[in-house]
Image 1 (spheres, helix red, strand yellow):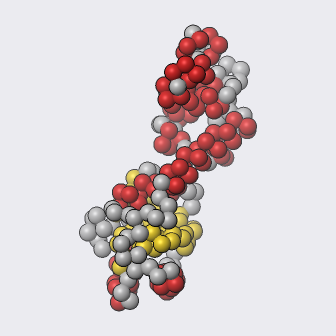
Image 2 (image 1 turned 60 degrees about the vertical axis):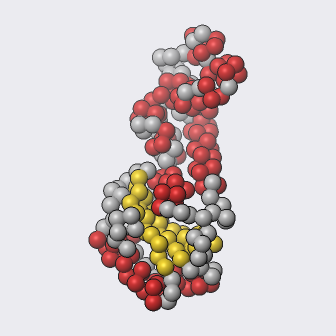
Image 3 (image 1 turned 45 degrees about the horizontal axis):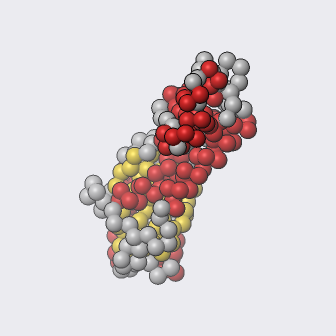
Length: 225
């Protein structure tokens, strides 16, 4: 066990941050500061290191649910909520990088905005991003929640939303919780049908992006649409 009080004063997370700045701390030390205190035979540093090891780094750790986090050895309910609050702030900062004036130039930018939210979502989501002629975001809306494999996408619902919001172009984003980022044959066939029907109405589907495990698959980049 690494007891914080046994560390040299300038190596303790709080004192180190005060002297050298918060950026001088390792990820483990920052998590330990948030956790605040340990339990018998486990310091806050031990707990944070176990978390990073169990989830293979911060990127996966911030997607963990409260239900799973509170089961971690050494974490109290209060400290679990502290971590969940910190993780939620990370997600909101990432999402705040794209506001109503966002112009998406490529699929990577779309993935960067939704990576954390869609990788951590416990159920499948289908997001409709509505754009103007200059690819500026007009509105975004989750139009389906549940099992995408059994989803009956309403083409009419998509097109009505686009016309109501004066959108000319659009992007679809959906996730595969805990699964492969590869789209299914059904995903591809449905997307092609949507693209073709949209074109008849003067609407343009720019891409359909699948997100899973912090990776993405762009149907446009793979020349499927």
